[in-house]
Amino acid sequence: MKTNLERIKQDLEELTKFTATPGEGMTRLSLTEEDQKTRGYLTREMRSLGIQVYEDAAGNLFGRIEGELKDGPVVMVGSHFDSVRNGGNFDGPAGVVAGLEIARVIMENNIKTRYPVEVVAMIEEEGGRFGQGLYGSKAMAGKVTKEQLMQNRDENGISMFEAMKDFGLNPERIETARRDKNKIKAFLELHIEQGPVLEKNGEEVGIVHYIVGIHEFRVKLKGRPDHAGTTPMDMRADPLDAASKVISRISGLAREAGQGTVVTVGILNVKPGAANIVPSEVVFTVDIRSKDSSCIDWVGRQIQMSLETVTAGTKVRYEMEDLLKVEPVELSQGIRDIMGKYCEKKGIAWREMLSGAGHDAMVMAGITDAGLVFVPSKGGRSHCPEEWTDYREIQKGIEVLLHTVLDIAEIIDN
Image 1: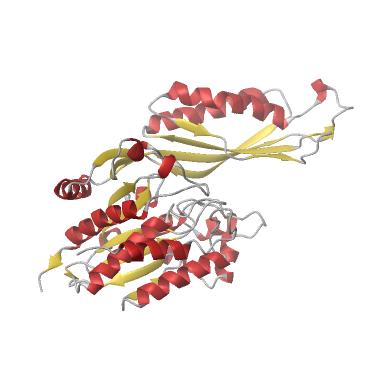
Image 2: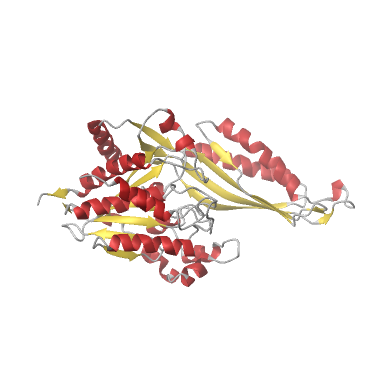
C-alpha cells in the first residue's frame, strides 16, 4: 500500500485556487464562496470513490467508509480547510488532503476494516471570520450552542447563525453535530509544524505529545471622547492610556510565568480613531499559551489585576470576554506508540514534540483518543503567503497516518 505523490500534489494545488486574495496568500473564510468551492471539490473527489458523503449541522464535511461493524466506533482522520487572512496553502488543507488520500488508498486496494473510517474536513478552526476558533471540533464535542452562533459576528455584523442559514445549513439543529464519544474510536490529524524545529534538526516527522493550553480573551475599555486640545489631562477618561499601561506589562508577565509561556496582543482597535479626539473606547485581544495551565491562569489574573489598578479612581471602565479557553492536552500514548514504531520500522527520522499552536486534535482529545503528526515547515513560516512544506514531506507524514488509521481500524484479511 502506497500513497500517490502526484495526487497529493494535485489536491493541494487545486485547493489553492479557492482563495479570496489571489496572489496575496490564502484567504478562505468560513461560509463564503471560497468555502463552498472547496467543499465542492472535496465532495466530488470523495463521491468518485463510492463512499458516503454528508455534512453535519455545524457544516463539517465527512466521507465515510463502512467497516465490518457498521455501528462500531469510527476512526476519524482529517483537519480544517479554512484559513487566516492572507495565510498559507498548507495550514489545515495538508491534513484534509491526508484524509482524502488515505480514503483513496483504502478504496483502491479494497481494504476491509473492522471499524468504520471517516474523513473529516472542518470549518472555522482559525476563527478568521467569526472569532470562533476550533469551531468544527467544538461542535462535535458538544461545546457550541445556538446562542453562541447568534453572538459571534463577522466584521460586517453578520452573525454565524445568519451566515449558516444563508449557506444552506440549519443552525437551529447545531446540537445534533455533537458526536457520541462512544461512537468515535480515535481522531487523527496531520498538520504542518508551523515552526522551525523539524527542519532545523533534519527530521521528517513530529509526533505530538502535548498541545499547549490556550486562553484567548477580549478586553474592552470605555472612557469618554473629548477634544484633544481643550481637555486638561487630569479631566480625561482616556481608555487608550489605561490600555497601554496594561499592554506594556504583558511580555514581562510571560517571561515571569516561565514554562515556555507566551502571550500575544494580536488586535488593538481604538475608537473613534481620530488624531484630535481623546479615544472613547479601546478593544484589544490577549492570547496566552502554555503547557502548564497554572501559568495561563496566573498571567490572566495578573492582567485583570493590572486593569483594576489602572482604572481605579478614573472614569474608565473595562470588560473582559472569553473567546477561547482550552486546557493543555496530552495526546494518546497508545497512538504515539503506533506512530513511533512505524517510523522506526521505515527508517523515518522523527521526534516527540510539543505543539505551541492549537489544533482540532486538542478538542477531540476530550472525547476520544487523539493523535497528531507534524511535517516540516520551510523556515518555520506559517500564517503567511510564504508558508511551504515539500510535497514529499507531506506524503511521508500521510503514510505514517495511513498505517496508524489501519492499525486502529483493524484490517480484516480477505
